[in-house]
Image (cartoon, rainbow, N blue to C red):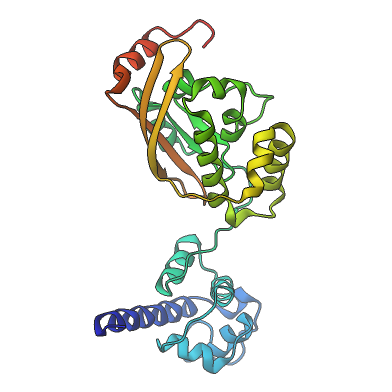
Length: 286
């Protein structure tokens, strides 16, 4: 390791130690179920109390706060995050300082799209756009997405799922080179959902698709993974014909796994004009 890399590593370790000390100092013993005890010279928990609650040795934890060159495991960092009552942003910061990916945890409760994000999606009038949840449920979409790739509403009263739609008969007709599109999407879905393997809600999606779609049942056991933030999609729309879109994906919202997909029409296949015509004169069944 070069001197510059070593200096950078040690700087992050010192920053991590200072961060741990600051979070320890803001907690009262009563907040973690400990008695106040004798008068304390400084506010917050003692090092030995944090170490005890996290299940690590006091000396080892002290070294962490001193910024020594030791590498805590993900399990230890998660335990410290729990003890120190770190929120999602603080937890991500702690893991980043130790060069570790933050383990994603599904938050309880139903996913909701905030009004500002919903307005932004609606405002993309000339670009199909939608927001996906952690298991690829479509949480909100705009009119352009409904007309180009929908319909999304009215599917058994539940939120539509991208994979349910992608493996439908309509999608097989809509997407040029459907098999390639479906395989890539499935590989990206597996990579995105790795933190949720074993979650009953996630497993229910896989079980349903396995039961209903022979291709899904055949491809899912192959364990292909992909990570695509951008790409292209070619469509053969039943009303206006061939269209070509470039798509981008952005993480959005304050819950893990929420993503915004935006499809921008490109000049190929005269797509901007075709999309404009579709938006101005939608089919009667839309």
